[in-house]
Image (cartoon, rainbow, N blue to C red):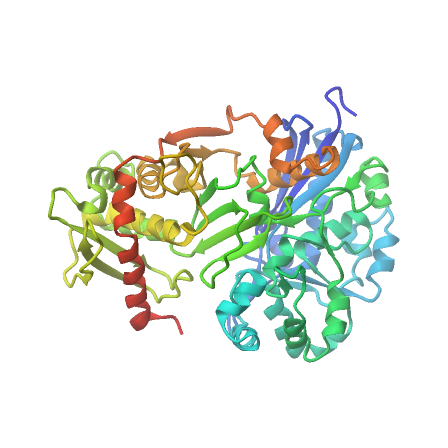
Length: 569
């Protein structure tokens, strides 16, 4: 124990880095360290941005040995900072979703017999039947995706069962393809872990069960029945569902508590306490909603290269265009997630068409026009509302090819939707692209929100923004105009450590919760808003929010029309 009580350790194993962060019970940060895969191991493993690519087949994967070496290295870096690892009471973490690790029949014995005089990579060389883990960027599984949807009848039925339609990156389709491509490897596999349960297994010294939230990123877990889907196991296994069920193992229902104490390897090598416990690890998207005490109906919008919209909700209403996961800590709650490829890059494309500003600020002109343009460019009664789609990459939501489309409709009723043959002024696109991205989020989340207070329309409570776009005042303003946010729009600043912090907070809750105490209750009492969040917009603006509501049906109809002629095939 330190003077301020026990410490907790959270990890984030992402595509390009392994981060570790140590916090106190009061959530204050004690120390942190990271390994950058390219910088630290790029030459040895021939990786670029953390992965290897087989372009011919669309495969993207990472060497498992890289992660073993990185874990030893990040712990050495914590030691070099004199972090009191012996005071750590519990460990949890966050890992990239969907990736899978294939253990050999010798794995359990090797994990249980680790000694401090050798490294993980040296001792676990024989623990894997496959040296690589597929990465979420992999797109080699279209055939398998088609079979998954055929098995359930439609994409809608697959989403109803598993929370998502079939996706290239999801683990079930990856397992099915690898079983077909590498049958000997599959036969030699005793257990299959997600990346989150793989990292937890290293700390436990035995193979850890999968987490109740991360398991929903596989297209194999039937969320309503809370069990593996028999028809999908049968498909992925080639007719041997019991064999695959045994490889996947049981799923841990409780997101908290201890799965066991840390392996003696970490006690003897890094001076961890033998009483240090290991809580379930989860995926990086579920961990993001644990980086703050997110209340039901609050939303997080991650504005990076891509855009992600996350929400905690008690309502399970799946659809092929988005994702539902079990909440990582709270039974009966779900995580709703939208993923867009055309996020920051698309906004930059619109920005770069505008003249450069003399000040050198690359966003100055974009922001000026976005803020000076009226909502939907309706400046006076009778003006038609302007709507557009700006896809510089093929989009997932909706499933539309790359292209730009511009439409207008009646601003009060949304009727009379018409495609515009001649592009409008490029200055108008600055506001229109932000509106387009926000209208898509509002359209798809509208069934999940309710009125936060009497007299207000249905909308999120708070909207939290993270990522590079959250620093832009024009983007934050327009998002608040469209999405609302009865309690305001906030920039969440956790220094790029949202997932690692989510893992560390999960460890605090896992080991300190009272009987029946929910994650957001415990963390809410200790979380200090000062320094972590900044209010950047008032959110709901009476009259403005309703203007966007008037054209939401027209926006949906526009997408449907474009899907008829430009659907990804």
